[in-house]
Image (cartoon, rainbow, N blue to C red; front, top):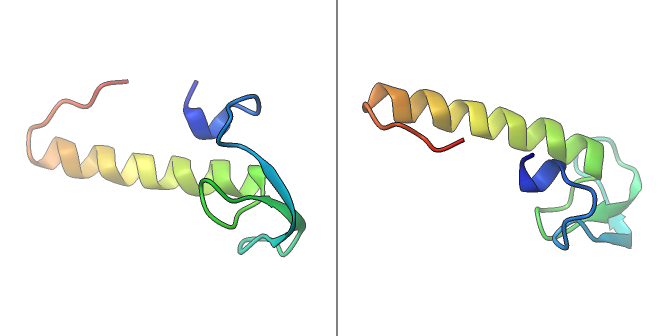
Length: 64
């Protein structure tokens, strides 16, 4: 499981006064940025996939 998708990981702390950039909901995860947990998983998965494509283009094997 990726760290950003683990609800019990210490980086996934809710901050009640922070508004999500993705959906506008209050109570967001701030260690990964101003995103709620659900929006952050989508965002980080998208970034991870992009980085995997870039690494593959350079012939670099990424660790799972």
